[in-house]
Length: 315
Image (tube, rainbow, N blue to C red; front, side, top):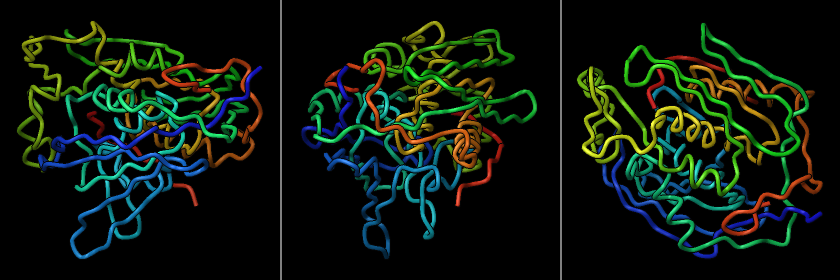
């Protein structure tokens, strides 16, 4: 059996867009990085500060109400990090620096597909260092009301099982279970867009959110129809986007997970709470540097914790 090796990008790649909440223009550049660097964010053009670098790590999460926000002692630095993290993790990129010149990652078309396309355009480089995994050893569960998240052992890789339920005829109950590999992420998950309800627009704007949202980057649902002229990309695009968010949020573990994550009526806060609970229980996981039972193959060969919190989640 082949030992899974760490990967990085073959070259840098750049994307420009606007932040879905801030409405501000932003440029995001993905840079290659050395083995064992992990995923890191480099925030530039900070008023009164030099550029600041933070790890894509659960300990850097400062908010999860409407998006996953990363920061440090100086305050929030990068908002809406989940889609670019999902693309990097979903395609098996272990090491990269995400340079961003604004407070929020560009929303692009509301999915991870533009980030996937940018990564595919430059390709992946296999590094001469074995990949390190976080192996889940026993089930860990968090719950709040009728929402819960659970992760359980899965020695074959990372799997997401998501279920959502909305009191809306166009959504209702949707469920999806998928092994997260580069090919399945690219085909089945990456293109699923963030969604929102027309009835919430005014309150979001008044609260300073969704200032950059439009039909170009959000699947918008009114009382009786989807407003986007092209319609949904998948019949169950809503739950697929929840899987996308989970892949991005759980990338903050700091290494690929060997486990099955089940999310019921969850979102960013639930994803983060589950990750905190897992990492806080040292008997529930271990580092694994051994070869994978079944190597993952994709574009290239892919082979202090925070207290959980819950609240509004509208990704």
